[in-house]
Amino acid sequence: MFDHEEIIRRKEKKKKILIIAVCVVAGMFLLFGIATLILSGVQNNIRNQAREQLEKDIRRTYVYPDPDYNFNIFEDEGYLELDRNIWYTDGNLRTVITEENKNTYEPELQFMYEMIHLIKNGDYVGYNNLFTEEYLLTAGDDLRERFTMQQIFDIELEYMNRREAGSVIHFDIRLIYKIRNNNGTFRNDLDYNDHGAIPVIYMLVIDREGEIKIDNLLTQRRYLSGLY
Image 1: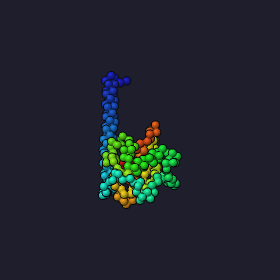
Image 2 (image 1 turned 90 degrees about the horizontal axis):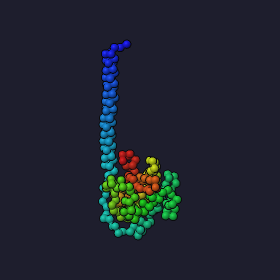
Image 3 (image 1 turned 45 degrees about the horizontal axis):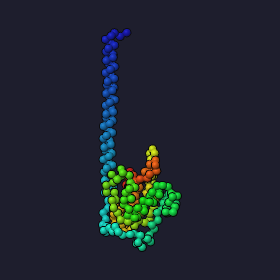
Image 4 (image 1 turned 135 degrees about the vertical axis):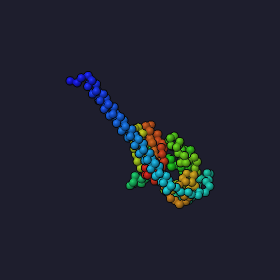
């Protein structure tokens, strides 16, 4: 049997060991937190540098003619001769979405169909109303406050991704088209009349009530980079 003093000494020893153990564990958590912050900072720095380099690589400057906001593109015979259909592809089959058959397509494709007509008609108010408030607050130069009627043609839609988050569904849809006589009021990353195309990804969000909004908009190169 231990005497009273020995029992006290043993209790004090256990107490010290426990305090040391707690301090060691706390120190490990602190070091882990610091390391995580440092690693996160390094990763963010690398990501920002990669994003800056990508923006530098894709940045182009074009000279456009003065826009004519009164010009009706549907009176231009040259534009009317082009393929102005809105095509949808699933990777194998291509079909045309029309006013007559649009209700046979999924709601998000109907949404894109209507959006394309807003672009053609230069309806910048209706177009901007399709975006979420969060996007509009951060869009900056990507927000098109005013644009003319757009002579877009060779139009094609294709799904890129679908995912669910609770009661919300996200659809990423690729839209590719060309612009005849581009004046830069809607797309300033395409030249005036080289008939080139830079695909863009419209990232749609559908809530539980079925309302569809555009949550983000990226060129395909930015989208695939995973930096945005």
